[in-house]
Image (cartoon, rainbow, N blue to C red):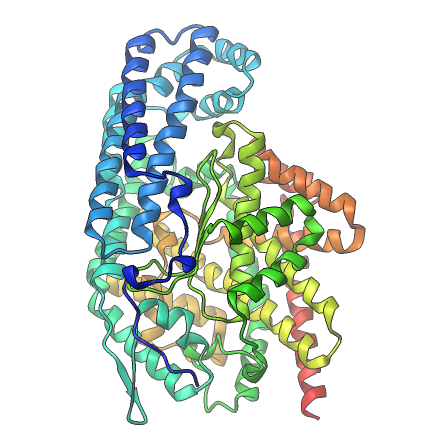
Length: 604
């Protein structure tokens, strides 16, 4: 087993493992210049447009200026947030980020009149304004859609001024998790092992040594438990705020409010959770039993669910080797797409480093008019290759839509936004299956699909979504949640899905503390929604080739000009029915069938 080292400080990380934020601003003074330009533009807009947004020409002229202001302020904020995300111990970056966040809230408050005044106009005039517009058309259509939920202009101004305050629960969560939690080492067989958030999630969860893996989970959970009350208080504040905002805007429930933003029906949301909880569970329990049998475990615990089917056949992959895998795996999407992949490596779009204070997991941030920035922690595993392909899926998506659409039309619904990312994982897996017919290799790739792509999106995040739905039901009924309630809800959700096949302990119940997605509305369920679309489109590409790829490229470039159902329809998938979801679950079951058969063949 590899010797694990304590996490290094950010300043000691080799530069080639870090992303290059100078691609946004070469010098810090450029950031402050853009911030001042945004502030001046906002002041000019107040003088020029406030009280005058009553004709199609003036409205469109104002929205043209507003697009430029959004570009500036988004770019400033993205830079600051990216700098913080790789080192929560750097107080200078935090102070700068908070300063820019305050400026954004001030600008947002001063310009809240824009949407308020436009929404107060007659519907016929707004239709005329939209008909005259080009880059502003979808924005105006969204204002028309939101008209019934718009509040008094002064109320909107006050709420906009509180933007930084509304973000406080998420900030508190991250500070507790990434700055304050210091994990002590744990000992197994007289040997001491260092522990940290990313060390646990990126390393120990996959550890083949059962004693080390379970000891790491126990030590990790023990530290989480010390912060359960402050984390619960932050989360309760988040959901109570969302409920209050839903009521103020006239929604019947917090679900209606959050789904309104996604342009998704309650039926589509509930179906995703209910069908997976009911129909995928038997397949995944079978997979858990297979893991238990292969590894000769005394019992199957929650801490054992991410171990590999064949840990001895899990080749190490360097960053340079990953480039070849990804370029070839995604080549079906065309040379322009592959060139983007090359640029990501060449121009340091990716932060591969493992350092203290860095955000966990992975994400892709794509400032309008700039390249994308991808955060992950590289551990030399094939799982990292799939993660990077996933995040490059986001990069490819926003490269396409940012190039083709107005900044207003790049706010893609979270229901759909994980489709391009999970699509890349599937394309990678399908490419690898074609490169080698060896049964052990095939089983390994198929188990990567189940243990990484489908487990992460159809199990981990879906179970979070099922738990989250119960939280919102309590809040919708006028209640509140605390650490005890949240642990109970998570424990019940996990037991419902895994049944008697997986032991769910009090430590497993603390899983609710580990995800930032709860501070992003109804986001967790959308991973399975996106992967449902991706599975169907990937199968189309396998069967039809170039026509399906071209359809997919048009979808990527469409941005938010269509709602999720419209985007899926462009790709040939009807998500208004349960057929794509049930077909995807059957497909997952078929992969597990084949893994079982290959295991029998290999152990015969």
